[in-house]
Length: 183
Image (cartoon, rainbow, N blue to C red; front, side, top):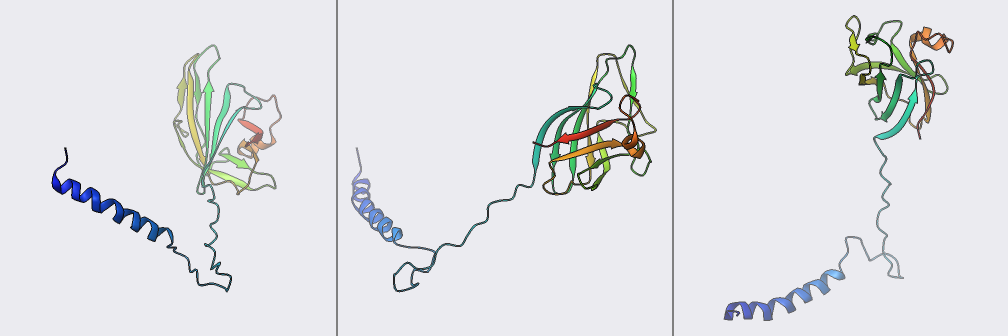
C-alpha cells in the first residue's frame, strides 16, 4: 500500500518525466539553423577505428625441422610477437637456445621487398650462452619479439641469421621458415 507521499510523487513525477522526454527528443547537439530547408548541419564524420593489434594463427613448421613450429603471430605497432614450439622427438634430450641481438646468427623476419625486422628479445627460451634442455617427448613453447613488421604485411620469412637465409633445405642446421602467411 502506498503512503500519501508515494501516491503524490507517482501522480506528479510521471507527467513531469514525459514532458522532459518530449522536450529532449527535439534537442540536438548539432546546429539545426543550417539552410532554408531546415536540414541543418550533419553530424561530424567518424573514422572507423584502426586495429592496433592483429593476431594470426599460423601453425607453420620449420622448412627443415617439423619439430619446430610457429604457432601464432601477433603484429602490434611497436613489436611483432612470434609464438613458437619445439617438440623433442629425438632419442635423447636436446639443447635449444637463440643467438643474442647483434650476433651473426640472430633471428630476423624479412617481409616482401626486403624489409627486415630484427629480433629484440625472447620469452621462455634461453639466449646464448645459456641453453634449455628439452627432454624426449617434451614440448617447449616460447615467444620471440621482433621489431614491427610494416603495416599491411601479409607474409614474411623467418631466418636464423644470414647463413640461415642462404641455407639449403635439408641441411638441418638452421631454423628457417619461408613464406609464413598472415591470414
